[in-house]
Length: 336
Ligand code: F6P
Ligand code: MN
Image (cartoon, rainbow, N blue to C red; front, top):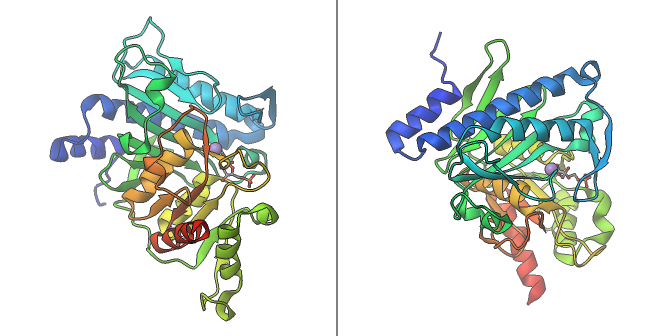
């Protein structure tokens, strides 16, 4: 049997060979991965674990919380509180940041997460996931919301777990993107794909087309050309896939290419998109760029955006480089 590399072994090898993962960051990533394992366990229980349905509350974004949103958030908070590697956490489910309580030692990192991405898919047994991002804390042991407002280029690690037919953890620490599959019997994450690379070209796109009538002209132009297929200006047919779980759509794009679009639209011109910059767009943009893809807001590179608020939203175009560059160029042309 060929030797299997676990997440722990991979991280220690990186630490030794490339010195790009300090010991405390390694431990932090392992704790997050362990929390994802616990979330995967609850997800897989479904109705048997009484984890389906609404929690009867709303989060800061005004979205109805599902039981699994709340549970996943609690699992991540509890797992990461006491390890001594963090100064504070921030979550899609919490209005304010969560500083590490004084009874625990504090560390130099900040952890941000979307505990359960794609929650509308929980009850219908379609892939969902967890997204996370790690920053350094610039303010020692006294983090504030301001400490989190760093552009995505400052991330030291990012990843996501997909709870689907297989449970996978996709991770970057700035040295390529690796995918680990959960071996449930053994209880460990096994490295199953090294150095994931997104093909530069694709014939597949992902967008919620029910919003088409609200799109701005560059998006209408881009998607219109895809829909025109062989007979249109692109001279090729394009296929559409929309899972309504960003983790699942991004995971597909990492494996076989594609472009994911969640644009801002004309319904509310003051709302710059749907996805949240700090714990959805930034970690995914870091991963996608590390895999040779591109990620923009239509106007600028996502990772260069200077955040103003913890829960701010942003338009997202990410995936196969040549398609992301094309739709970004259409936005620039529309401004001319
Ligand atoms: O977290 C937001 C999210 O659920 C993403 O996972 C997903 O890509 C998107 O929203 C789904 O949006 P819609 O409800 O428009 O299909
Ligand atoms: Mn989400």
